[in-house]
Image (cartoon, rainbow, N blue to C red; front, top):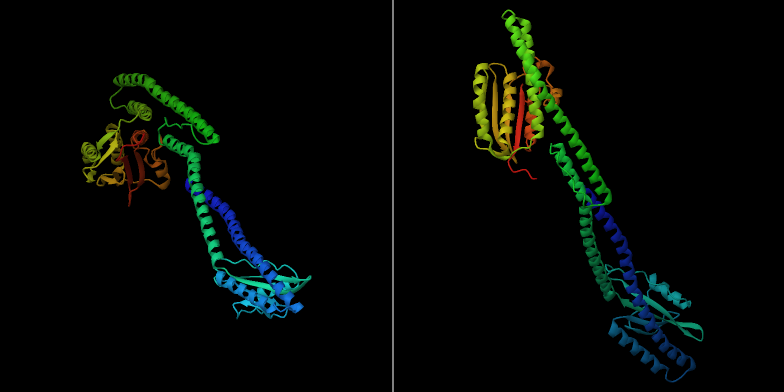
Length: 469
């Protein structure tokens, strides 16, 4: 969930920062350019005042008009040499009163020409189009009118290079970008903390639910962190788990008590059957049938009691020689296999260790091998192999019996379930359920698959490392 929630938060935060960053960058560039334009307007006002003296002297025919023009020209030249800004004062007919450098002329068209004409009309020219850092050849042109006796008689035009301004804009953008990047990192860190705080109860709840699903009924959630809604959910989960555990405990107790209480009457009934058999002719079929059903009922009660104890008892885990234990169980079952004409073999690694309850693992292997021998006909084989697969020690029991269909594979291991094709085979249908409960208590598992071309493949797995918790 965190892998989905965190990118969503990051995208939202990035969108917010970009939505703030773009207007800020544009405003910064506009502010820098506006500052340059204001400076040029101030400079133009000073040059316009000097130009008024020249035009006034020329209009009155004073002898010092040429000197004033020369002074104005020198002032423009020093200004252009000092700042690198082209500047000129042009009459209405585009002729220059003074200019620096001397070759510079007004543009024939474009933005500069429009600014000149607006100044001639006595209007303040529009702000120049924004200059961006990547526009390396752009220059900034500003025009201001020279007014004498209420009439526009000339225009002061400045054309500024934009290198320094573009540099300042770029530096401002870099600082803004660094600030946004720092804000993004802080926001990402805050999102990590937020998602961790929000999802920690969810992860704990998931672990507890998985624990209960795998048989660890004492799994609970500490409702101490996270949002109030998740704390309430954790408390509700704990209450539910308590109720489920109590119901299951009552069920186990009932099964164990019922099995135990029925054993004594059943034992007395079997004894009476044996006494009755003494009064009847030897080989009486009815007595034999009753005796067989009684023994079968006794076996079911024993298996029920074993299942109740297996689901209730906690596993005593230790490092177990899985390969050695498998070899021991194969040797114990080989005489029965030989009597049935079935080849029982052991392959794979001889030294594989895992964390398991030796008694529980031994019982599970006995149940699986016994089941394989029951359904494997004479002349076929049952192969037991021991391997280490990743973090699990695995014992596979593969038989060459009739096998099961896909539907039957989905039900194998259910309590009292037996295939309709094998009802005549001795058994209560609880052996694999008991084995699964014994293994699950220690973190192990049972799984089933088809053994091609026919037969059943049962996999017994136990962890190779100590289970946590």
